Image (cartoon, rainbow, N blue to C red; front, side, top):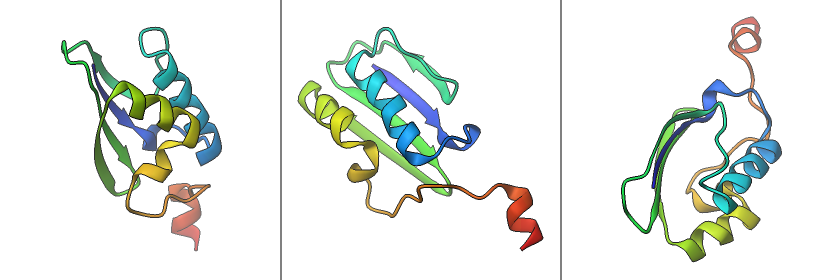
Length: 96
């Protein structure tokens, strides 16, 4: 399965985001969220996630075991950059 996610379209904080994606990772055929730009069955046994968050683009290719592990531990543990808990809106940045 292939999923393209743009985290920037959802204002939820990181803990909610990780829980939301965790539900999808547990139940990929029955859970889709508003941050999903593309979801397709590509016939692969692995789950490929192209994740856009902030200024970062990450590709995760997960086996079933890795998918279930990430569902419990959260996706932020699988990337090589610090993911902020909260994101400032553009209007907050412009007024700073």
